Image (cartoon, rainbow, N blue to C red):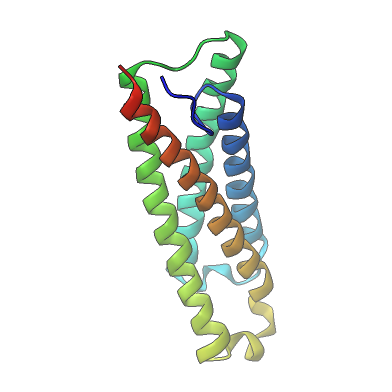
Length: 155
């Protein structure tokens, strides 16, 4: 099996998973702490997708910890295939949620200037949540590409 940065069962993969978990959880926390976040379904979709991503990455981080502690690589084709499919599905959902939330926020800030009109909306926290969601997606994209390369090299 190839040694790829971010491979499952390696320390670099664990670091990526922990980063994904923390940024997805922080994104959910920032969004739910913003007053008036429920004005758009795009924001609710972001919370749902970040919650799913946080759960997925937490489970994979636990699997990585177990593989590192046992000093065994994850070389099972079935297991790596499951990682690849799960990573790509959550990656697509996360990117869609972050992009739709960013579009709605652009509408609120630039087009309608709703953030200037309604000071109770909490636009700053929503923008931070969206930025964290994009960062979490970026880390997930790195992991999903690494898992794809590992899948191609597993015998």
